[in-house]
Image (cartoon, rainbow, N blue to C red):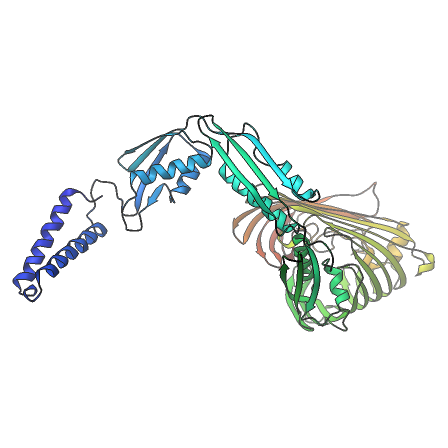
Length: 619
């Protein structure tokens, strides 16, 4: 507030200014009423300037608002009062005219905030203090829910509505909350709309608050009305067959209208990978109680050319190119041809050339993949050349579970200093089961993943004879400790039932276990932990590895981590050793997963620190 002393000064300044103008004969040409208006305008202008540029004094600074100190309440009540006063850090902003809010304004807003949470008889005391205002609150007894009578007028019992009503928040004896009342009322209307009750309405909606008796009663009569159905479904904008689209969309003509089914179908179509966008439009006919659904679909680009340039501490330099045709026909058959170069050096590189032909199956997200590949690998065991024909059936069981049945036919030529067969031909059937607890592993804050693989071969399937049964189990788990801290666990257990001598001599390189490297036991070289023959790591029948990691989100896009790894690949369960390491690293969170920069030290032997770079989802 501007003091009376300041008001007198403002009037004197205005009068002197007025006289100076008048003596200058400026106003002599203006009649008397206009002089009065000008004088009044000058007073208001200088008054506002003085308010904007007033001299600092020992009085509270109200230039941005009134500081309010609230006594007698905490937590939800205090927060609701400050929110109702539009307070920012306990300061009530100025009015639209630029003046501090009145005491009545503060008291009325406080009462309404307290009443919203059930306190109707609170005693409020507002007084000045050296910082602004101090508000003292004596709550008194609150109003509590007493009688609740909710009547449903529905032709048939609708489970979604009945269950919602059965769990209403108006528990007898509980302090009333007007926010809960409004939210529950709105949720009932939303649920009715979602279930196709598009004409549902409240015939009676009464909240009776008896302040004298400190109780509140709810009286509702909710009329469900008729349940609407889908009249017709039209699809436009895509060259793909309607049969394919209906594998992902459950919207059918004649079905009961369900908003949840429509949203789920739209999301499934968007996630299928076939379309850029899917827009759903609805036209409601209240006379016939029907809804027309229109799907406007924009296909993805037919062709895609991708190039790859990268680096990994295990895979070395990376180069790659791929060409994809997403629409060979209206059934969304597609193929992709690719060539990748890993461990790129001046005179040597791993080469992997593949051609895949993918056929969508009747079940959404399930497909049949046929693959031809030629691979040159430079591993610890030696240099291998592998030609493979493989057929894979991918079955998407539900959003979390999927399985794969596959059969691979391969011919391998191996150059090695170890005592192993140089030429192998084999057929290996396999089965794989995958589980993700989250639908988007790239942005998982918590959750877990399990991958289980079984594969085998036999005397009639290989040359020379390769008879084995193998399983490989992998699990990842993330616990969210709070908003910033996470605990991550990774574990792997693999075992092979096969004669050890036959394994060492004839097992294909793809099915030998190795430990060490970026995604195994950090601090050790890639594939360096395994049985050795002639100073060559030849891989083991079994593998055990695990990792325990704690990371901290110190920025929106960056995490710092510390970890310990342990593991080994070996041939004999009765005689094996675990190798351990510790390390720390930085994670950069990106849309394609975390980019991890780690430095780790092996705890076994006189080994130095190793640097590791990986990219991908945490699950």
